[in-house]
Length: 85
Image (cartoon, rainbow, N blue to C red):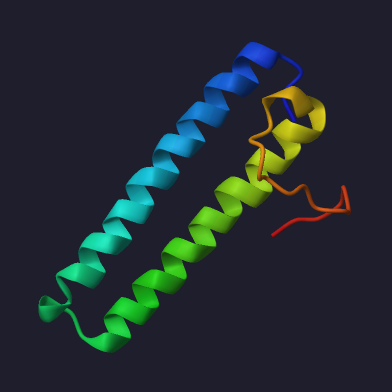
């Protein structure tokens, strides 16, 4: 995705930070579900899951193909290089 390893590292760290914030927001909505309907929680969870998929599998996949040494140990690359979420 990015030729520069330094740029890829910065983007990877930013994506991981964003992922943590999204996961925390989901947890907060689920824990405070007294103020949300079940359908709102389900819709928000689906939205967050799509965003996380795009960030981790879409963006990171390209970075890790270019710079495999930056890959996190349990990250699985897609088999097809043409995969787009």
